[in-house]
Image (cartoon, rainbow, N blue to C red):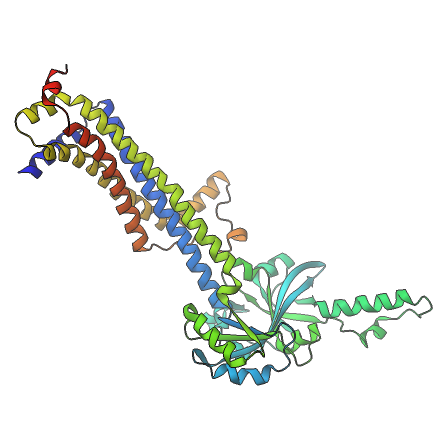
Length: 441
């Protein structure tokens, strides 16, 4: 009969009586609710941001890059070696040229990153139609293939918007190779004052003058860092821009499992035996992922203090209740109530408050996550705020992923803290001397 007796009194004390204690109880419940909801929202958003960034990188970037620190001339010999390594998908190795350029359209000049690819080989690594918009819309939905003929370019949609370029327009790409050639010719003429000024036709014989390239598609990866910076051009055009002849900057590799890429990476390095070295997608983005995870852990610790503050509110409520119920406690002990029964009266009261706040906080947090983008749009429209701008956070919407393990840790941790906070005043109440308690007015 211990549990029914204790629970009966705990539920009776929880009934609102329009007193100051009831107000404190409501505030305590709201504190727990707020702490749980904010924790679930923040941790889910941070997790979603981390997972979506991984998916975006793995969708547009290779799992491994193989380079030798300079121009790779023997890439045709290296490809068969890499393809034989366990963990590498069949024929999933492709050459690339990648580096910084300046792109110009109708007087507008923007820095960008050009990537020269062999479309046929690249499509075995990356689902290019998924990320490319053609004249008739996304290639994935129209069923069209990626067509990248000579002197053509696929440009990031955000970069195209900044340049004012559309599909069918022409842009000019200035790479370090041709810019370096122009500078060298200018210096040569400056050092020789007797030299006859050279015309544009004369310069064309010694340096590569960038030719206009036709825009045949737009990159729509869903990640701002790609859509605002990248250009895709045919491999041989990129080789001409950088003056590499038949050389490339490296090889892209797709593995069976990108999350266990370290094992394949070691096997590739062993197979190449010093001819080149590999770097994984995680190595190239380590700082970003480490920063996100560090922020996630710090935010979890900081926001959990909201729950701790709410637990102090529960403790304050129970201390007030025990002071008000001192005579009742004395009567119960005089009638034979045991210490454990008295403890459970007040402990159950605190546990009910913690459980109620946890359940409401869980529902509130999941609801906010479901309507997060709608709520953000409403705030942007009503208060003219820029919340989660794509230019900074790289995604159009607020990403979120609810991990059941994280939610369970948050809810159980909050309930445990609230119960622990209730245990202290419950123990104090149970230790009251019944004789002294009955003398209290």
